[in-house]
Image (cartoon, rainbow, N blue to C red):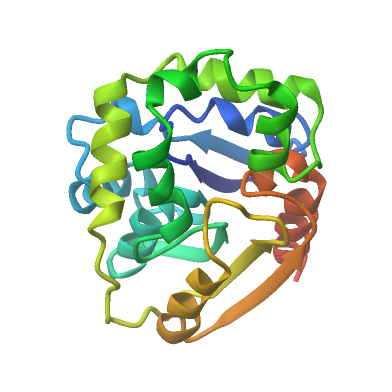
Amino acid sequence: MIIRLLLLPGMDGTGELFQPLLALLPDNIDAQVISLNSLPSQQPETLSSQVAKFVGDDEVIILAESYSGFIAYNLCLNPDLNIKHVFFAASFLSSPSRLIVLRHLVPLSIIRSSLIPKRLLNIILFGFNAHSGLVELFLTSLQSVSNSSLKHRLNYISNMVEPTQQIAVPCTYIQASNDYLVSNRSVNAFKALCTTLNIIETDGGHFIVQSNPQLFVKLINDLINQ
């Protein structure tokens, strides 16, 4: 039996950062990375309806990373979709204060350059749970998205208002112990809105899918084998 898995990327929108996970997934999982940058509209509300077309009539599992958490939440409100489970990785449904601080303190051109020491980037992004290859992968992914797109997404999430409608799709929230970009309080919105929610706390930084892909392979396999 082939299981469909949709991977929704973080703020870079490229999906390139899913490479470490894709390398470990078993053959019975049909993983599809949705590049947000390739979609016609970049408004998260509209993105949800565009991503819904990739779901179709199949039963799917969704892994939503960071920025895409709001997109996955909106997909769960669509009664026509057959969503088996959603994994929210360091996601948020209201403005994550730590991430927004970067918009004011660090010019995007600096982040995209090699001026910030990679060791510091490793700590900020991966919480020590990474190797140099992951930092390089992060920097490469940023080269594929324009400054205007990144600014648009930062501006959008700075004005996010927490939704109020509950979702019945079973969900798991993965919370990293050393997430320097998204506040630990972000999980509270999921507690209030997900009627069936499992919370997993694990060591790592904001990019927990990349620094601990083995965890996500196990979670997906455990779900399939239930």
